[in-house]
Amino acid sequence: MEIKLITDHREDYFEWLLLADEQKELVEAYLYQGDMWALDDAGVKTVCIVIFKDEYTCELKNLATLPSYQGKGYGKKMIQYLFSYYSSQYRYMEVGTGDSPKTIPFYEKCGFKRDHILPNFFLDHYDHLIIEDGVLLKDMIYLKKEL
Ligand SMILES: CC(C)(COP(=O)(O)OP(=O)(O)OC[C@H]1O[C@@H](n2cnc3c(N)ncnc32)[C@H](O)[C@@H]1OP(=O)(O)O)[C@@H](O)C(=O)NCCC(=O)NCCS
Image (cartoon, rainbow, N blue to C red; front, side, top):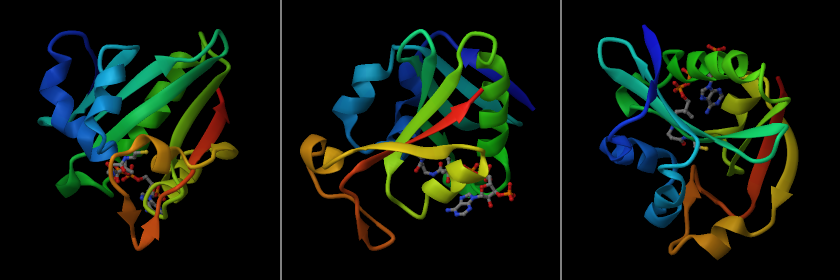
């Protein structure tokens, strides 16, 4: 298993990024920002982007594991690798997500804690309503981890 930086042809992973964020324009806005990472285990299984918010804080964006490989530990391995990689340069890592039972418990299991919310983010920035597990996503929940 290898976790590697993707420097060229990031658009090849666009479909993966859409698994984590359905709004194309938002993905396009940060596709070429920050670092793109891929976890490869006999083929790429998990992809994400890390952007840099300020001198202390980096932000995890669009973590996505291919559906048929979810629940096998790949997402957590990627996050643990990123905690270690960025700990020498940044004090905190943040991640923003909908208030969904599909993502919040996963990030909490990886060590993030709820920090702040952006009220109505999904209603204001998405061109359609997003319903996950029967829950309408409204606020963006930010979780944070000290590195
Ligand atoms: C969320 C996502 C990235 C998790 O990746 P993954 O590779 O499936 O997660 P892992 O297998 O590494 O899970 C790590 C741990 O979290 C737990 N976990 C994962 N999803 C969970 C959930 N919905 N509820 C509770 N626990 C969960 C796993 O059981 C595992 O626990 P363990 O360490 O005790 O074994 C993946 O489901 C995904 O790609 N979803 C679609 C895209 C998406 O929504 N991305 C997030 C955008 S904010």
